[in-house]
Image 1 (cartoon, rainbow, N blue to C red):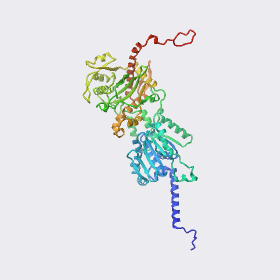
Image 2: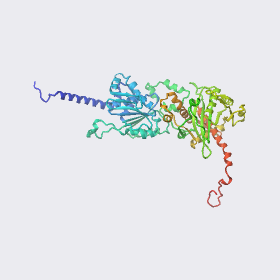
Image 3: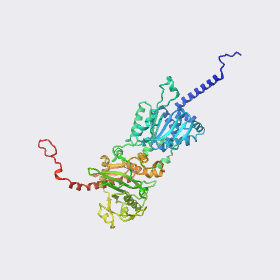
Image 4: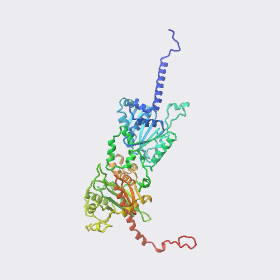
Length: 593
């Protein structure tokens, strides 16, 4: 047999040829899986995706700007984890940044990788573990490092997260973030692009990959910055740019087997069920005012400007925290809306609510309301609620106390007009005497008393005044509330020593006034109103509550009465010659003389 000398190959040539064929197969597979990442999840990572997950994952790899508005229970964090590991494997040198308002929340995505994808996917977990060089979840720099130079890391969305670089920014629960932090701190991470080896070849010098951003969250209020970002993404998607936006409600979770119908029914039956919150968190609906509400979120939100709440009760009651004294021009008004029956699964009863208002007089001799404390109670007896009100009044150094005298409020008033003892310290609590009601004032038989009790006997006229005082307070920038439950977290980290290291229960105690304020806002924007005669009547929708709002309304009403009491004193200080008069129009120019 004659052998062509040109067909004879050396061992080296054979080895090179094998390597080239192997690399071509790898290249073809990589290109294929980059085009169809959901198939990489199936065949390499052994992950069975639901149809909607396949679609979303595909869009995340084929668009540089993605917005996903997902309901609770949809597995959003898990899907982020799947995206991140696929990106890191298929695109060596990728730097995936997962960021949330809290570092703990961002780390949860990394834990989905280490505790689920690396352990529960059979041969897929074995292959993934072979790709990963190191997992570091403890400390201030949690990250997962891959052998191919890729890594995934988590950061908190705050001003300290500077000088990092990324190819992908994933903003988890972006509605909770400060847009300034996103724009000025996090987006600059994306200035560094992935540098694959072929970029050094002049032939491919222009084939630079664009970095990617992903905004993921449940829905929120339309008046917030986050809704504007969603609108931008939708508009750019419709223009055919590299944008994708979608909303995934709870029905999709049920259809996909990720959420059970009984779970949704349980949410409906909760005693504190909030239809607005349900629409945003489960139906993926961005809530906006219709224009017919007595209170609109757009009017209230700009007044959520107070960073500091009053110290938490756990510390105040045991004298562990110092409560600041009211200023010389301040009235600290405590209001109590009374309810004693606890809610249950079938009925959503009102709760008792205490609100404390630091009302500070300005140069125009009118008060500016600052609502720094909100707390609710359920299922308490009359004497228990009365004792709490007295303890809070004296511990928080209040100057006025307001109680609704209707229904169960009468029992509370009877309790607080008698001498009591502090349940924590045993101190004597001096009884209150009514300021604005002679009959109730006579019920206080003690020789020693604090005359600061305002009795509220609701009437159409009084309720109309209170409703309008509250609304005008927001419109005229005379009523301020605490910052949102999300914004408060970073503020508490900065102001409460060791806050991040405290357990969840203690952290919740610090956050509670902010959370209660958010619930109060939801009550307000859920109120319905009608004109009855000449008075505005405000009522809660069926199944809703308004205990927080009622306490706020009565508090502001009393603040205005205190303001009106100043008027006679002011009039006495004005000299007649100082009053402006308009001269009659006799054909000469008008003006003041």
